[in-house]
Amino acid sequence: MAEKIYRVNMSNLSYKIEEVPSHWMGLGGRALTSTVISEEVDPECHPLGPNNKMVFAPVYYQVQLPLTVEGIHWELKVHLQVG
Image (tube, rainbow, N blue to C red; front, top):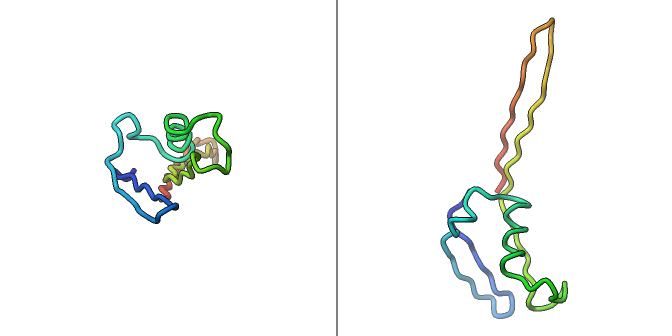
């Protein structure tokens, strides 16, 4: 996972780069976006209002496929890092 957060303010097109908080390290995809929204957005704000946020995050996929060929059991693990 990247160790920086890029925050973009679309109202004035400014941006800032921050360090990732330690309790967010290791999170990615849905876990990271849900954590950011949960911690930083009022649950009663309007979905399209100025106090809501749009969050993009890297995703880590792991697929495990069991495979049995001629009585031998194989497991194939595929790791894909997106972002």
